[in-house]
Amino acid sequence: MSNLINRRHQLLVALLLVVSIIGMGTTVKRVVAQDDPVTELVTTSEEDLNAFWSQTFTDEKLGDYKPPSAVTAYEGETPMDTPCGETEAENAFFCPEDKAIYYDTTWFAQEYDKSQNNGYSVVGIIAHEWGHYIQDLLDQKLQLSEGHYSIEIELQADCLAGNFTRYLYDGNGSLEITADDLKEGMNSFFDIGDDENTKWDDPDAHGSSAQRSQAFLMGYNQSVAVCLDTSRIAEIANVEGEPAATEAVPAN
Ligand SMILES: [Zn+2]
Image (cartoon, rainbow, N blue to C red):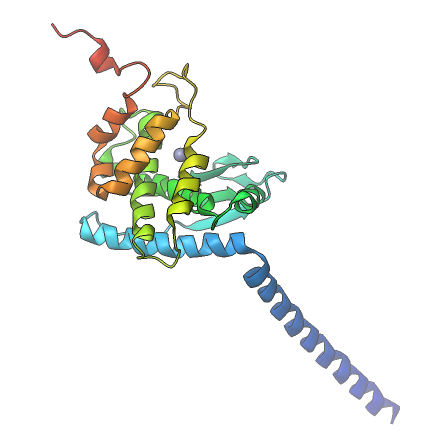
């Protein structure tokens, strides 16, 4: 008798455990889906970026497209080890070592909360980092590792983000971008450009706000092929600041 009660008790405990595990699983899932709009926004951006780039690789005959290995969130204040070094607060980056994109989720949440619209700046940052991934995939074609400056690589990533943004604006993705989103995104990305003393060949140069806007809009208004034409990017890179070495040397 007592054995039976014991067994029943054990069975009940086991059953409760299963129920509570299932319950926990369901709760966690629901929290992510409903209470974390940033994770949802990043996930939808990933889907749209993969769809856009997969189609573009086919259309432009760029070879086989494959998605980045991962898009990984980290907490800004808690440095995380990656093959490209420790993560930093208020940053997002593409790591060529493991072909993954990393982003500070705390920073993204702040950007999202600041937004008066749909949080497009988060989408734009991911699209820019994806641009670096595309550069890595196409490295042999673009030969970016040979003779190109940081500013060109950054401006090209802005241009590629512009291509993708147009795709969204035209209603081809799951994410909806309005004119207000676009205006807000442009302001938040390009308000802070390099200061006027930054030399064009500075390894940290990203471009002035005028150059960054110009590169983004070139991508927005023109084809991916235009962004991939490194001579077009080089032209923008020289719009402000000192001219490139080839132009600085007087013709003789
Ligand atoms: Zn960049």
